[in-house]
Length: 185
View 1 (tube, one colour):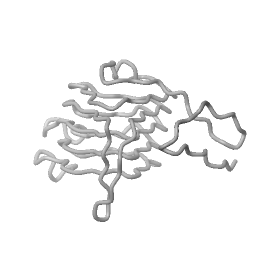
View 2 (cartoon, rainbow, N blue to C red; view 1 turned 180 degrees about the horizontal axis):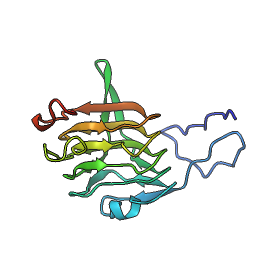
View 3 (cartoon, helix red, strand yellow; view 1 turned 180 degrees about the vertical axis):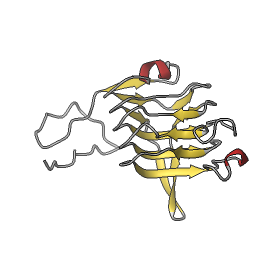
View 4 (tube, one colour; view 1 turned 30 degrees about the vertical axis):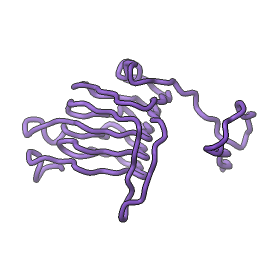
C-alpha cells in the first residue's frame, strides 16, 4: 500500500515528544545506541532485524569483520554532503576502519548502511578476489548503502554486490592496489 512520507523535523527545532501513531506513516524503528567505546562487533554481528545508531567517532575493528545479519540497519550520526563535479563528497562523522580482509560483510538480505565512512580493508594476491573489500556484498541481496564514503581499501570500495542493491550518495575513492589489477579492483 502507498504510504505518505513521514513528516521531517526541522534541524533547528527540537522534537517535543514522540509522534502519535498514524496508519499512514512509517514508524521510526527502535534504535540501539552504540558509542565508539562500545564493542561494535559483539553488539552487531549476528543481530537480525535490528537498528543500530552509531555515535560520531572511530570504530576500529582490527582484523575482524562487521557482519550485520538480515534486516539490520547501521545508521551513523548525520554528516554533510557537498556537490563535487558530477558526484558528491560525503563527510560522515562515523568512521568504521580496520585491517581485515573486509570491513563490513552483511549476512543476508535487506541490510541498510547509512552515514558511515569505511576504510582499511586489506588483501593481496593470496586471497583475491574475495578480500580487500570495504563492503563485501556477496551474501547481501537488496543491500542499501547511502551517504557513505568508501576509501583506501586494497581491492575495492564495495565488491561481490548482489541483485537489488542500491547505492545512493556514495563517494568512493583511492581504492585498489597493484595486487588486484586485472582481477577485481
